[in-house]
Length: 250
Image (cartoon, rainbow, N blue to C red; front, side, top):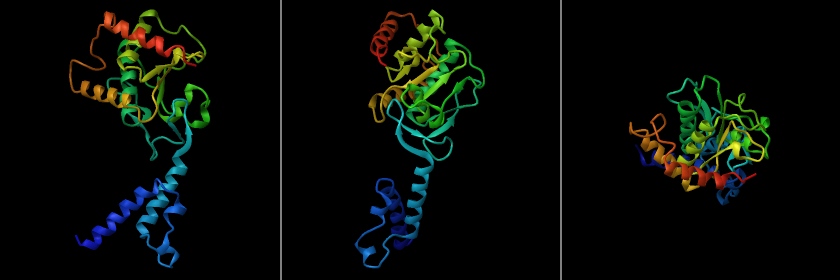
């Protein structure tokens, strides 16, 4: 490969990277351009155009209740895609890929194994920003950071949808995830079907929990589907402590 080719490709990559952080008018102007010479290769201009089109099509610039940006579409070039939920009959769930996906899929799997067996269509992930109320936790679904499990069985605004034993399991799931997930049943206006990421983007706790879950997936002695003693004093105390921290929130 010639030096000229290498430099040209490097320019394309560098230009695309700059484009996502600078306004187009700032990126595409400069002294050389003002002097009548266009310093921007056609490939870079095309990368800028595509990045801008993607932003218009996907991004809203508006955060959901938990601080993550809502996206207009799923499965279409953004951060939210339909992901599998192993061990369940679900066709998949649309969530934000990466650490968020790892954590929410774990919630769904433990719910399926230990709370109530799920059927196809029982879980709703991403929802269009136009279909959620922006000031409520349900808006977290529009950022791909929340799921509703069997929303038809646990309607928003109602309490008491779970048995005492099922509640013990739900509390144990939340404690196992060290508080990075919040249950909608703890909100002043309850939504017992809703499970949301409860930390903001970049919070190291989410990455730590997700790394633990990925490590568990490689061990037959850990992870969703593995028997755990939810009545052990240590686990009950952890669940109780987390509930005291999360329940008072609005």
